[in-house]
Image 1 (cartoon, one colour):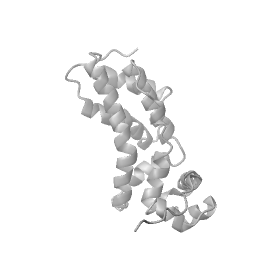
Image 2 (image 1 turned 90 degrees about the horizontal axis):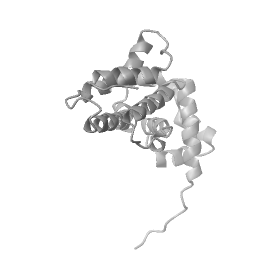
Image 3 (image 1 turned 120 degrees about the vertical axis):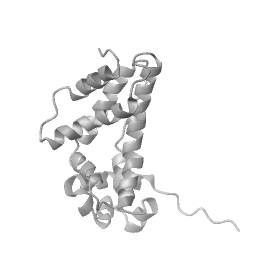
Image 4 (image 1 turned 90 degrees about the vertical axis):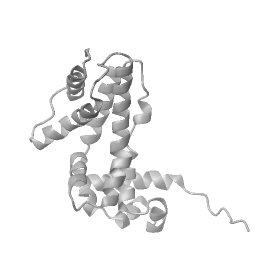
Length: 192
């Protein structure tokens, strides 16, 4: 027996809910974000929200991941410029309201393990994969030492931002270019 197709899914709900969820995350943080409040402000029901995102961790990480414009940053024939662009995209993302505090939430032992796993899967892993791809492409092209320690470099790239934030300092001017140059030199390359 065939099941009826039912009503077509209203994709405009997805965009509205994700936008409202991002605003609630920025204004109230993850712990205070309420799925009922998000659904109400987005003009939909909690049931419609739960059909799309089974829980708060799913919605929060989907909202953050939806801000990514990584698909607009296609690799070029200049890995160094690609590295600077990727770091600049990271800077814009982490500088959003509550961006750094969301990262801090991931380090707290009491953080929902599902939230932590989804954040790593949807936010951290894709970024690290993009950065790794850029550095490996540069190494394979002979722009970096053949034995360049890309694993350590990955942590150095974004870790610089976190270290600066923890010290209470403002990021330096031209942060992305300066970090890219430092890491590129450390991997045996010659930055421009």
